[in-house]
Amino acid sequence: MDNKVKISKFKCWFLAARPKTLPAAFVPVIVGSALAFRENSFKFSVALVALICSLLLQIGANFSNDLFDFLKGSDKKERVGPMRVLATDLISKKEMAFGLIVVYSVCFLLGLYLVYLGSWIILIVGIFSILMSVAYTAGPFPLAYNGLGDVFVFLFFGIVGTVGTYYVQSLKLNYIVFLSAIPVGALITNILVVNNYRDIEEDRAAYKKTLAVRFGQLFSKIQYVFSIVFSYLSILIIYLIVENEYILLPIVSLPIAIILIKMIFTYTGKQLNKTLALSALFSALFGILLAIGFVL
Image (cartoon, rainbow, N blue to C red; front, side, top):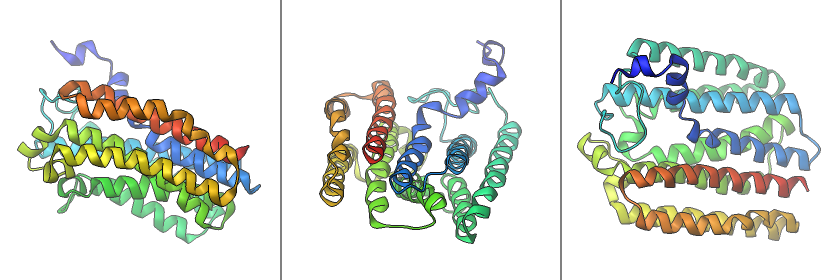
């Protein structure tokens, strides 16, 4: 079947953006903005630009992964995970490289607005974030190929995303925003944990030394469960500090967490695509409930 005929170019780019991963960009912004709202520092225009930049950064990282994983031979047509647009000839290498430049350029230009409102620190963080998202699979020491992908996701889509969103609106920092960034980063990282657990054999064959490849399937399962448990513990700690019962709202998501834990211990192969999708939705729900707790 000729995929180029059957699938429109728009849908090809939509697939390349990996929409199921976009909660990783959405959650830190709403939590950081909710914290700013709690302190009467919320600015809609700033939050909106921060959200767009975060989404573009995530999409750019996905484009970069598609391009450099393909160039390294990691993505095959027969892969267990969702279809990749370069491996299936839906988008060419030149098109993806151009798309990558466009996405990061727009992200950088919009980010200058945040620099104007904030400080030079935002510029440094923004440039470093873009460079690291490319270095995730590119360069002489690609993070994803050396077991550092989880650290990157936790730091940039958890800590930097949440704390940065709060800072550009309030122009200050406190320990509550850092504590709030922990469950955000942990649950977003779990999306990657499922991805790497599912692709462990493919990654091993491609010499992609993820944590799953380095330490095995059991480690990935324990890591996944630990991130969920630690996220709920973080909420309890925040509650004890701020003494606001609404902060406990994320506990409503506990039944989904139990389902996910069962899935990570019983699902294999393509079944884990369902676990990955639900993990993304779970991180979004948890973050939204936490944000509502800060607003109320």
